Amino acid sequence: MEKIETGGAGIAYELRGQLRGQRPVVALLNGIAMSIAHWNPVADALAAAGFSVLLHDMRGQLLSDKPDEAYSLELHARDLAALLDALGLRSTAMVGTSYGAEVGLTFARDFPDRCEALVLVDGVSETDGVLRAAAESWKRAALADPRLFYRVILPWNYSSSWLEANEALIAKREAAMPDLPRAYFMADGIPGARYVEIPDSGHAVVIEKPAEVAALAIEFLEKTGPHAPNE
Image 1 (tube, rainbow, N blue to C red):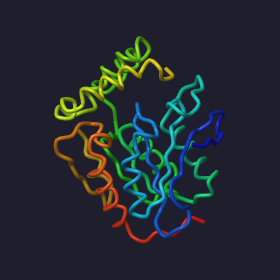
Image 2 (cartoon, rainbow, N blue to C red):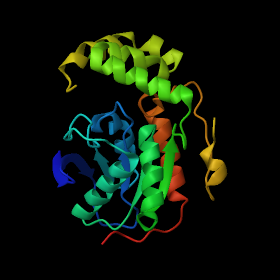
Image 3 (cartoon, rainbow, N blue to C red):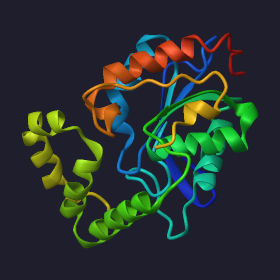
Image 4 (spheres, helix red, strand yellow):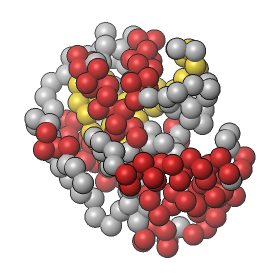
């Protein structure tokens, strides 16, 4: 893992694969409670398919710096642009999940010439009272007790079958929490977009079913047309 400094924060990142090539570098964008390692199965599948993969923790997430400031989707998009600049990359394709999908949408809006393709997993283009209330409950739980925070987000993120099949893993992750630093279909409005549902999965589908997510992302990225190599 390495870091770049941008906008007063150190951004932790990993780059897997060769930078030069005909296929775009694919940036994997975290959900709120994710870190780089959560993407490992998806990143491995993309790398095996010949893609270079860029992973990073956004400012405020586990491995990156956490300045005491207001964060925004626009700020995270600028950090990603700075990361591309630091690596000498002209553009990227993106696979974003949840909060990361919204960062990806913002990046595509603010840096359209640097976005080659965008795969959105469980993202939204707007918030409502339910989402605001959920985010507020997560925030309060996180400030009160890290283990409580983990329990609060479970039913939002995982399917019933995954929860029932992974009780031991859930208990292990919950125990580790104190050691950590503290219906609109967007495809309808995006030309060339494709909407896919992965059955029997929850919001955290990139963790529940990484093979399916990777296969769909690879299929989409391979059909988005020829890409100029980053130089």
